[in-house]
Amino acid sequence: MASNQTHLQIHSDPTEMAKLQAMLLGWCGEAGLDELAAFKLTCAVVEALNNCIEHAYGGEPGKPIDLLWTRSPDAVAIEIRDQGRPMPVPPLAPSPLPASDAESGRGWHIIREWTDTVSYARENGGNVLILTRRLT
Amino acid sequence: MPPQAHVGPPLTQQRNYRRNDKVNLEHRTQDGVDIVKLPERLMMADAADARSSLKDIINQGRGKLILDLTNTAFMDSSGLAVLVSGLQAARKRDGDIYLVGMSNTVRALFELTRLHTVFQIYDNEPGALRAFG
Image (cartoon, rainbow over the protein chains, first blue to last red):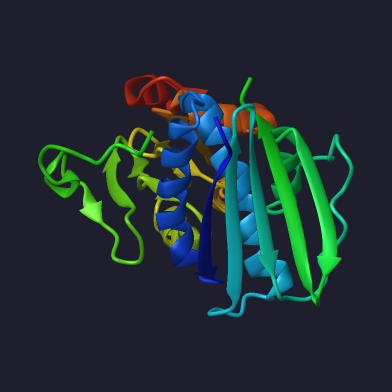
């Protein structure tokens, strides 16, 4: 089976994440992930998108985020591009957890633990984050 | 699998829940314990309102809360932050927050982030009410 791709352009608006979350769960199901695996991958992607909104764009709404979902026979790749400021370099796995009473700092841990690979680059004045998850 | 839509009567018609207008937090009180039903999703878009609503409930009550996650199919780290913030506010009032009705998927998120060691988690509301004594 050849790979297939879906491209979405969304905006740095948290309310768009709720709609996208439902869509991602559906795509994960179509890729053959079970309910728990679909939840984990969706959560990791949502965290990455939250980072674009919060860190790359500093909470400013209406800025573009491109999401490219590529499904191949043995893996799913999710490429997320924004045009915001450079992100802090993602911590290497295993990403540490914050103190138990901390209100933030869990996003990268979720991304690292619930995907198989994470790569980050700065390209053409924007951030490019690619997450992958094996299907077999 | 897409999230399940709520079916049946509106939740506000069940067990005298009162809807909070800021965000879909439904709240009632039983035996001095505030019981709050969380929405289907608790994500960044709702986090600020949910945090504010939860703190209002904590400050107006005794700081003893049960958060019912029965309807909560998805949560991200912003949602976790709301709960941690509420827990701190409750414990400052010598209270606590117990969680009930957690799905296996949301439980996986709590276990990954080790928050299952911070919150007391019960299968259901009667169990959590008994624990509050």
